[in-house]
Length: 250
Image (cartoon, rainbow, N blue to C red; front, side, top):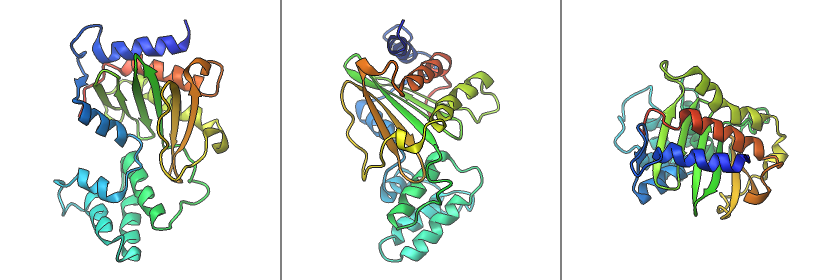
């Protein structure tokens, strides 16, 4: 059976468990919530939008990135130097979530600060978008071990491979798409556009997330087998089969 068919079948099963009710560990989302959460896996939003997501976070927690991000958002148009310093301090916090690092670098690039050449194209996350049953399934994995899966029917699984109780086999599977991406030269991952290009219906898209900007590669669905994106579809299939039931959305 072609990997495309396997991915589609497993993606559907991971979302619905073969019935009209969400499988345990999966959560059904309203269309607006699904669209918002799916959009956030690319971690390319501007700083004001990012800070608005965490408006209720503590403002006096020195271990939290959110107070510094909020300060940088407030100052970015009037005091770029201080805003830049706040963002750089965010990057020094221990155990920082990969997406927060990506959002911080998006803001820094907007202020004219670029990552050094050795880190700019290091793959921090991979997002696989796949057409299924007239919709799109989205699987995102990040260097910190987290995984986000959204199926075309409105179901989601959020999984954190950093947890001590997580399955070692699944942790390894979550790392696989990033390992495959690292074998591709940056130029083969696509260009870094000024803004995220609109998804092309009927195509498989892989987004490569990096501090120097995200790259995108698209292949028509009927041409993905044998293409450079085929290993990502296979890796995505394996993740969904093992982790699709997950630990639930959060």
